[in-house]
Image (tube, rainbow, N blue to C red):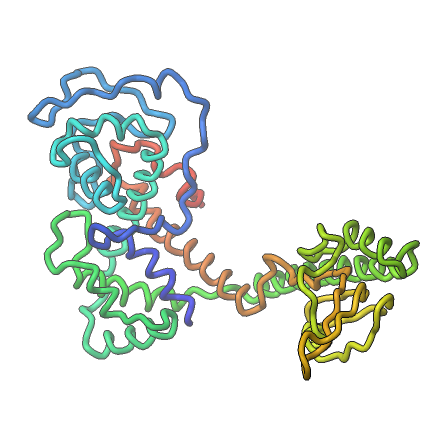
Length: 389
């Protein structure tokens, strides 16, 4: 249940007011990197003061798949609503904080943007997010009743569960009652979409057989990690049988070779002498009684394995003080498996993945119909929507 709202945030965040950085659409794949060609070096059409292109010939697509349009050209059509290139570029640049040279109100400064493939790809992702919002919002308006105070209270509680220290009101404050851009959601539409998606995505569950298979793979990763750690420990134990282990010089040489401690470059020697209590604390309460010239056996703590050798003993510097020891160590860390989630994290990740797939499958029919056209990115549906069944 708690995994729904983070996904909803992703779906809505692209519509925040200028100054708030948007998140990308959940699953779109960026257009692949291409070797620079003459197409990318082609100077974009110059814009005259009226915002119209001075060239009549249509420019080819860049490697990011973007067409060269003039300011007033239609860049997106959706549900009989048309959005111009100027509207999309202005809103994208305000939200992304993309700097433009000269007067930000003039379309003639779009030329530098149109030659920047990286920014074009960002704009592609941004536009996919906007399209996704618009399609879902249209359905929400058709199938969902306006949010009541009861709905808002329920969503506020859910929001607080997944966003500690933040409130739904804080989030909705990012939206305006009357947005300046037709691409941005109003505050009421954002709340309506939140309510609609919350109810629909709650129905999307990970199939039991898929979850079970995921758990098996997760356990396999844990077993592999434990086996590798066991091999390292067996190798670490053999250090105590190596030549020089019971001499100062030999121990320090072994520390340089085998220790994972940061002090290994110094032969495992700690930079400052330590009291016996400090060493005991490092060993999680295991008393340390060795004297000069003595080397410990294998010491295990919850975070590591180590050998410790006493190189020097220093008497107390003042009456009532404690003696200190110059010590060196050879350390093997008990590393936590990196990138291996808990079962709870796995479930949340899988739920989010299935919810994202549901969203894309849900909007696909509309985007493949006459209700949608994107002259700015003619190939925008490629590598984004699932294959047709």
